[in-house]
Amino acid sequence: MKLWAILILLLPVAGCGYVGWHVWQMLPLSNTWKTIIIAMMVACFCLLFVDYLIGLNGLPLTCARVLYNVGTSSIFILLYLVMLFLVLDLGRLIRLVPDSFMHHSAMGSLTVLALMLAIFTYGRIRYEKKVRVPITLKSPVPLSKPLKIVMMSDLHLGYHNTRHDLARWVDIVNSEHPDYILIAGDIIDISLYPVLKEDMAAEFRRLTAPVYACLGNHDYYADEQRSEQFCHDAHITLLRDQTVMLNNEVAVIGRDDRTNVERKTLNTLVKDISQARYTILLDHQPYHLDRTEKAGINFQFSGHTHYGQVWPVSWIEDLIYEKAYGHHQRGNTRYYVTSGIGIWGGKFRIGTQSEYVVCTLQ
Image (tube, rainbow, N blue to C red; front, side, top):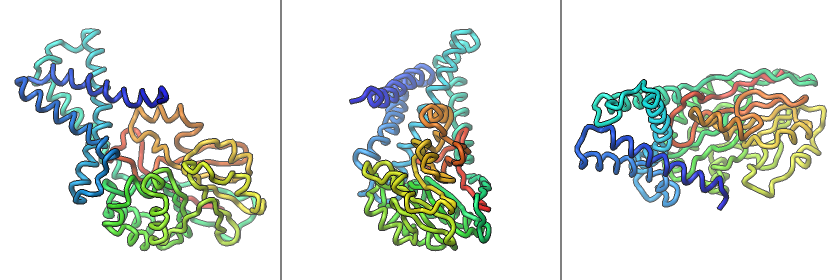
C-alpha cells in the first residue's frame, strides 16, 4: 500500500484518539457517562466506513439517509474538533487557557459544544445558499446570436441530496431561461438506489433547455452503465468522448472521466472539429490543463474538487491542482473549475460555496 494511502487511514484514527482523550479529560461526568459518550462518537465515525464498505441499499430509505449523513458528517466534525483542541492546547502552553478549563470542566465542555454547533450551523446554512456565478465568454469568430448557458457540476444526488433538493435546483436553472445546460459530471453520489427510489429523473425532465453532460468518477462508483441509463431516462444527453454542436456554431466536447483509462485523447477528440468554431470542453477532473491549451480548446469547465468543501482542506486542494477553484487562463484557453452545486457527504460549506455558473457566450 502506498504511503499516502496509509496516512489517509492513520490520520483519522490518530485524530479520534486525540479528540477522545481530550473529551475524556474535559467532561465533568462519571467514567460511565464518559465511556458512553466517547463510544457514541466512535460509532458515528465508524458509520463512514459502513456506508462505503457494506453499503446502505438494503435499508429503508429514511434509515439509510440518517446513517449516511451521520457517518459522512463525522469526518468534518472530527477535523474541526482536532483543530479546536490543538488551539486550546497551544493556548494552555502559552498560559492563555487555564488548566481548569481543560479538565473536568463544565465551562470548557459547553464552550466546545457551542462552538461546534455554531460552526456547523453556519456551514449548513452556507451550503443551502446557491451562489450564481456569471461568466462572459467571447468567441473569436462571429456568432449568429449570444448564447446563455447554465453550467453545473457535482450534484451528488443520493442519500443526502434528495429529490426535494434537486427540485429547487431545477427551479433555479429554469429561472435563468438558458439556451442550453451543461453538467460536468458526478450527477450521482455513490448509489443509484435513492435516486431511482425517488424518481429523480422526473425532476430533470422539467428542465426547459437541452441538457448535455459528461461522467464523473462518482458516476462510475455508482455503476457506469446504470448511471448512463439514468441520464437517458432523465433526458440528459450524455457525451462520452463525444461532441455536440450548439446552434451549428459551438462545439461542446464531453470527455469521459479519467476513471476510464482508455478514454480518448484530447487530440483525437478535436481533430474533426473546425477551428473556426468555438469549443467548450466538459472534463470532470481538472488535471493536465496544459493539454487543453495545446489542443486549442477555447474554454474548459470542470468540477470534482469541491474546493475541499471546508477550510482548511481547500488549502490542500490548492497544492494538488494547478487550479483547484475559479477562473484560470493558459494562453488563449480559459478555464473555470467550479466548487459544485451539490456536495459529497455532510452538507456543510465552511470557507467555500455551492454554486452554479451562468455563462454568456458572445
